Amino acid sequence: MRALLFSAILACGLTGFAVAEEWRAPFGDFTITLPEGWVEIRNPAPGELVRLGPSHSMTSDRIHECNFSYVERMAPSATQAGANAGLESMDAERASAGFPQMVGVRAFRNEIIDGVRVATIATDQQDGDVYARAVFAVVKPTGVRMYMMFCNVGTPVEDAEVEQLFELVRGLRFSEAIPNTNQ
Image (cartoon, rainbow, N blue to C red; front, side, top):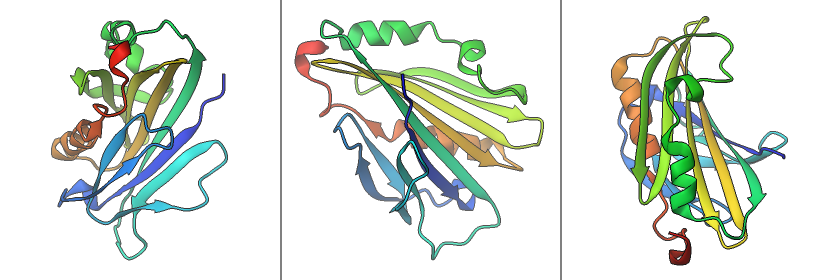
């Protein structure tokens, strides 16, 4: 299974979180509301789906990154309810797997957004950065796409900035993407 990464750079501590536009995933599985000043950045790294971030005209003394990856599995009989149930038991310990330098969990949420379960965690790292990850699955007629959004929020990070990151995740929209037959 191959994972593709989707990267976004968060600038200015995510303050001034005004809505500028939405970005739609190439498969139409979801949209995400972008903070003011964000653009699609050309030439994503190998394996990345897309890179979104602040325009070059925006400046910041801190750089923030977010990465989405996805894995596609053939499962024609899958349902969104089944995919949601698989993520419902995800807790902070399971969600933090893969953060080898983690020193603690800053925040964790496991919630339904537009009919899709999204598990999101923010962790403190040994280098002082805060990393975050959101995981969700979208069911299509031929199978399931499991997405992961990974973010490097930077350092130092206040709790309000972590909350704004969770607001970015809540900007995901799935209602138009999920076939009604699989809900």
